[in-house]
Picture 1 (cartoon, helix red, strand yellow):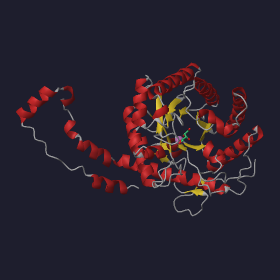
Picture 2 (cartoon, rainbow, N blue to C red):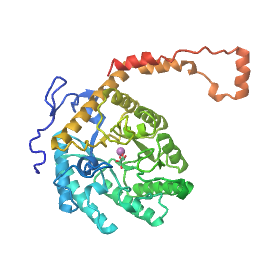
Picture 3 (cartoon, protein in one colour):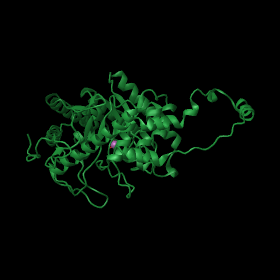
Picture 4 (cartoon, helix red, strand yellow):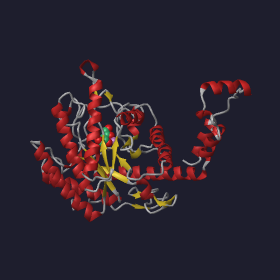
Amino acid sequence: MTDFFADIPQIRYEGPESTNEFAFRHYDPEAEVLGKPLQDHLRFAVAWWHSFAWPGGDPFGGQTFQRPWFGDTMDLAKMKADVAFELFAILGQPFFCFHDADIRPEGETFAESRDRLDEITDYIGGKMEESGVSLLWGTANLFTHRRFMAGAATNPDPEVFAYAAATVKSCIDATHRLGGQNYVLWGGREGYETLLNTDMGRERQQAGRFLQMTVEYARKTGFEGTILIEPKPQEPTKHQYDYDVATVYGFLKDFGLEDEVKVNIEQGHAILAGHSFEHELALARSLGIFGSIDMNRNDYQSGWDTDQFPNSVPEVALAYYEVLKAGGFTTGGTNFDAKLRRQSLDPADLVLAHIGGMDVCAAGLKAAAAMLEDGGLEEARAARYAGWDGSDLLESDLETIAARVEAEGIAPEPRSGRQERLENYVNRFV
Ligand code: XUL
Ligand code: CO
């Protein structure tokens, strides 16, 4: 045991009336919603990077956090893992997610980095066994080190492509060994800053082949988890290739991967792309590529990827409505890819941030389930499209349709879209 969370109690469900800040008011893990315990609906995960590796910097200043495990030795990496598992236990968090760079210090050579990853993977594996906590997903950090400044798979230098490919192999191996339920690829620097030095067509081919190789290796090695791409439109590069769900779907189709790869959709990334979170979720569901979510929001005024913990029940409810409509998570879950604000220095801040996020998600999911059970939105939607029931229009052709319009004297009357009525309806539940 470390003493990092020394004065913090185990967090339990105490109900909506509780005024204890170290308690859940909405997240009762065992409570059944739509015939399933809340914890199995939500499948919460802590993000290793923001919670334990992020130093609290911003573009104007460096580190504000002074965690006792900061440093680049394996002993400190193990202390970081000890503290991480203490947080999981305090919160009753069933899952976590990591990048290779979050859990092990970078070595002098690729081989040394890989050895360190192997060593810490064993260490974390032991802690998972003791605690029963599982790995939601692993991923490779192909964006922080300066070697990746011009991209990983899309780099103009094939040696960087090779280094990235070897890194992904080692991360799939680690994820597989830890029984990870998914493997995520976020193309941090897979994009470009200026067309003046960029061959976009070539870079896109490189990215496509890289993803094919990743899928081929994962399947060959017996990894049965889901492979997920995390779309994001910009930041760090100005033009990211995995812009949004629609762009990723086109990319997957182009490289024959639409049945192999799904998406991990992040609220903040959806907002950066000019969409709502629920838009991205609904599109992924309708395309059959919905996988998992990163439940962290952006500040609506700043236009940056601020990665804040969720705190709006109405927004979260609409997101979980789409998740429930997709049949709920299978291998996916709710990853808090969220960081504290840089002034939130205390260990308690980290615990309270997760309590708040978990409670907001639980309240949102319950509201979404109630809306789904009530059926009001589905009824309204069915009524809006009722004219299509039994219609053979889509099997027809322009000439036949044109003849019919004249013969039958078709003259459509516009009808209300009833948006305000539906907004009022949703507000009854949130
Ligand atoms: C960056 C982001 C990443 C991915 C994993 O915006 O969301 O943390 O979730 O690489
Ligand atoms: Co993310």
